[in-house]
Image (cartoon, rainbow, N blue to C red; front, side):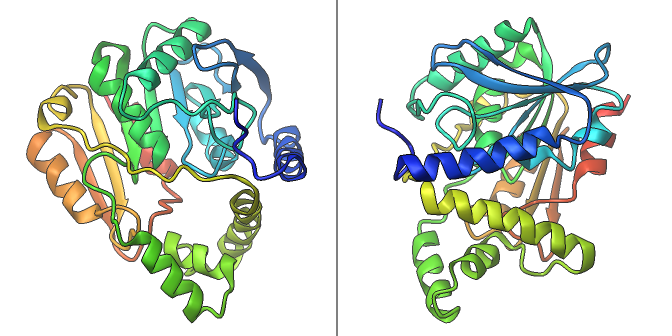
Length: 286
């Protein structure tokens, strides 16, 4: 299998930092792998062992460190499983399933079966949101609630994103970290939030430097597929999203899923952060 990293040294650098993050996980946890059709899948389990199950799926060029700031609150009521997507910079297999087939559906079924779960709630961000949508539209009977943060698949990706990144990089005099931060919309943070964002961006930039990104457009879900989402649904986008057409995505959700909560955050980019309480309230609503 072809590695997702540019070098073995880069792979070690990314995973060494990740293992440090996992060692400092903010709550008591279990870390293990479950076998799947796409290879071993890494899981961090924490929270209320008697609570309803909740799966967290991070985005591209990331891993479960995405949820470091969320697991304390979510774990108060849920048995939380932070899952490293296969083919991304975590401890799961480096296999990259075909986005156009049902490989991700089978992978998700394998994960749930491996965890002994018949059903669960899903929270997905960006690519993880697309994976959550792919599974929920194919197997709605296995999803209790669906919370999506800047998910792909609701509207076509912005094809001019690469050009935007190039122009932004030139404007920033080649400062790659500043370019990525601007594109994600994380460059407006202040105070303690800014310091946490700085550390997170340092790790993201380490991943960007060493991981080979998936240069593909996420397939858009058909209306009939989206209409199958009868479970409670929350969708959150930032109106400054440079990767996805946030306004079009929100309008499509409002039209096809009138029962869903669709939120467009002003002044927020693709990195929809600080939504822990909103997600918690949605997941625990009667």
